[in-house]
Image (cartoon, rainbow, N blue to C red; front, side, top):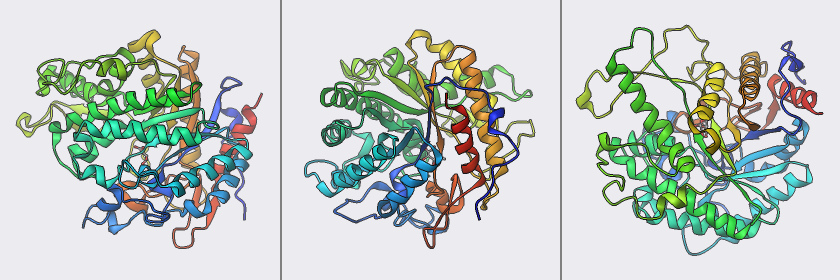
Length: 457
Ligand code: FCB
């Protein structure tokens, strides 16, 4: 039975500009399944999910939403929603099974079909080239700890652009290089599961270099390409009982490592000072070579911002433990998502106006490339509707305060494989029954559909 739109009227949300782009996001490993079909190589996630204890209940993305076989049905759902654009990611090991060299045409064929289906539905394809599923063969050579991976990424970008660039104009190079570095290489809770703490910093530079080289490669093949990077950004907050100099220093250290490390080089062409973390000079001991920062800092067409919640920190209880901060809990009794994340819509306004204050004219147009929440299973997801309404209003507020925001992609279209949490977190506007693949739109789907319709000029 269809679920009717909830009582939180979509028309209560302030109007965004007429040309504002409404979208939804997904990522390849989280939805596609078909893990070794049509010549696809293994990615680090195919390997990591088999490590005992790595993913809750041993879930894997082997089948996931089976989007690889059901993409037509998913595009039909998007058309029903009235999406202007769809952000998905391309699986690098589907295109280059060993990360370099031999191209697998069947992998390219899949995205070709997807792009055509989207365009036929009037939806702009907005691919991300890297959403964490590095070819395992490249990880075997050192992965993002190695500079070579950046060159391989640019080659891969060119291969994809040559095939899709006649129809795809808006491109996102990387998804959340901060989260990939910290979760994947710093703490080992995501693939590739390496726990190097601050020794993982080379992963930041090599991903950013990859972004810059791929930007050049995309522009060489697709002269009218618009290129973005999707950074996870968080406003950093202190509790009222944590205001010592040590706490303030911890907040600024966290801001450097989470936000500025990935935003400064792409917008200002330089890294924040990392001398406290073993990077004594601007070249990070030779890692950052001549010309790298020019490549990374070439003007972008847009900054993708993924926002979920602010981060609270305090001074580290044990400074010898290796990190210059401790993560803390807010004292305010914020509502929580099913994941336990605090719901703080005004954090998004704070984040966007903060980016404008920090980067000024160097800030390109902003796109919210992810925002959404995990909620308990079920179709009547009023809490998700409230979450969306609050955060979209927060985007409108940032716009009213002078931030040029061009679009909003909610995370996510479908329930999907939520990394180390497996299928335990449900982020979808559409519920997925993972035993059968059956898709059922939730109340939030109807609400978002009505919102998009009501925002049309
Ligand atoms: C982001 C990821 C995305 C999804 C959401 C919940 O960090 O980019 O794939 O897992 O979190």
